[in-house]
Length: 564
Image: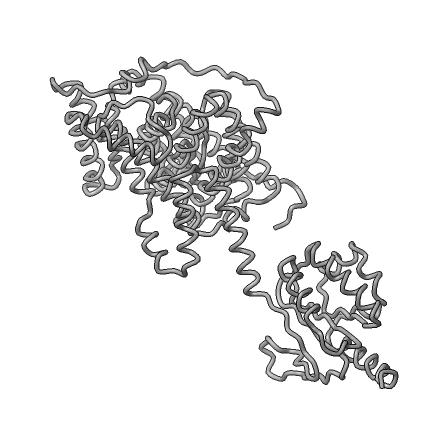
């Protein structure tokens, strides 16, 4: 990862259009139309579940989907509102209102752009898998919980957003189930489940909405709440861009939520792109993808939209229907825009319980229960991380879960680095080629009074502390020369440099020579930048251990008569 150099912003659309053809356009057209149709019920459902109107869900899918395809780094990524954001968006609206959501989304977009500009796209992919699974499963259960009221027709108002109080209210009101609403919901659920068994190309969610909406409208006695009943007549006018007031107090208050949106969006979009690359054989530019996602999230709040990210289900639908360039994603946005202009009055008739059924299936597909079952056969550390992340997501909120998840990721990374890093001490004999495949090993004689410490792995604060403790615990006869062999040290951090400086100075106070051996160029540059090289004679920084041991032996032998 190189943070220097030009910004890594190369939209996949530009490369795709250089060799575009009529045949590719035909494939993209078909895929774009199909994805647009599939995205329609999801955009509406995600909008409502997030606490905004169906119109906002569609506007987000149109504008966000267009920008992600036009500016992103993936050839097949489809962007829009997703189930992963339902929980965080709903909580932000409850606590800060729609303007607070707009500001948080804008800030999240800026964070995503910064992640891409500083070339951190590849780093985001290193989030441990159990943490991602824990997030996703927790979000799935939370989405399922939010749909119980509409699916069973309980008619509850002011349902608590917290998981445990919410289920407490549900359980105390299950005697108020509306059986007609439940029947319509179950019929919707059956259609969605059965449709893929007939053909995987048929959009089950859309079929359920069409069939159930027509049945409710035409069959007397099916009196269930619809989108129009709850939200009134939906507008068909294109929203005008609007601004909002920004000040430091608002920014400070919403920064944790913005950070959560940004990290969750980055994880989901890059995960979706990685899955797509595995199917198509293409290669997503992770940094460009983050910048594209960031631009989308900067723009949509000005039109009242909610957060945008890459959608795995819609991206896979795009791939399976022949989409191979970002043009398919742009066509998907155009299809949704045409529906918005001409078919919004019909959306008023869609039953709320039908949308609840759509989201129940989404939550089931997100849950990844098979993956969870597989992880439970992994080491206990992975299981603990998964369970902790899941419980934090469900019981508390996604902001805490994201923060703790990232902290766990860092701790796990450090733990694995520590496990794979070691410090070995040699005296009397030293195998120069130990740990290599060289058939004939050179063995050096190490004179009395010479100790060789070999650091194997990154010399960062964890290993630096371990090395310092090892030096302090050496209570025996003090050596004449300490050789620190660093051939396997790929980098060194400020803590290690500081500890090394203290070691050199304290050793020199005790008349102990310190010799550095096999220092790699980038590590040597760091040492020179910190002026560590000025603390040692020039010949005490050796390129190879053979020369270091030869010089140390001479120093030890010269000091032997004086010690005697």
